[in-house]
Length: 68
Image (cartoon, rainbow, N blue to C red; front, side, top):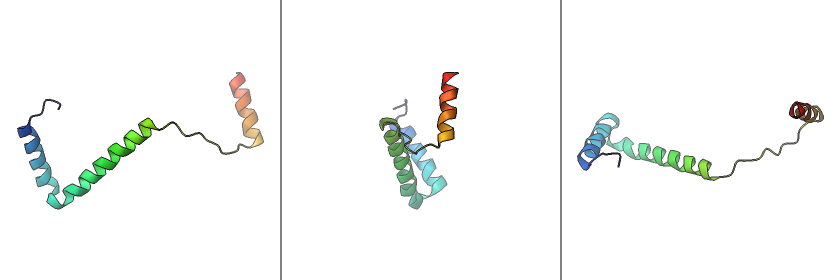
């Protein structure tokens, strides 16, 4: 895993615990998990289509711009 052994991961975890404190670690883990989940969802879902109706003037402007 990125060339990190168990000792390196242990020291990184120890530093994180010293900086943020033990009680706050579950909140940090939850935030990271949600971020990863949202990223995967956004990456796998098809893009959303804008279905809001356009005004008559806006539609004509877009047609003229596409013809250029």
